[in-house]
Amino acid sequence: MSRHSLMTDLRLHIMTTLRHPIPAWVTRGKTIRQLIQELQSFENQDLPVRMSVDDGDTHVGISIVQPSGDGAYCVLVNSERYHENEWQAFMDKESPSA
Image (tube, rainbow, N blue to C red):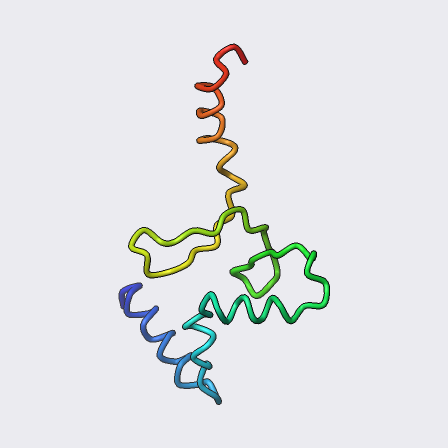
């Protein structure tokens, strides 16, 4: 049996063994308006905002908020790795004596 076939079988098994369907908001995400409304519900508006893609086990700060290339989405970006490469090259051009 191929790896693709095994993965398909596993997904089907998981999908058919769920007792309740996954809510649409989990996979659809939030609009900018919904996100702002939810953030405004926090009493402390000075709390740092972090993002996670593993149910909160790990999280990173939001460095940039930008539109996707085609403008279809608002993208929250963490740029912690940017300073290791692109930023260094940029700064080398700006201050060659460094």
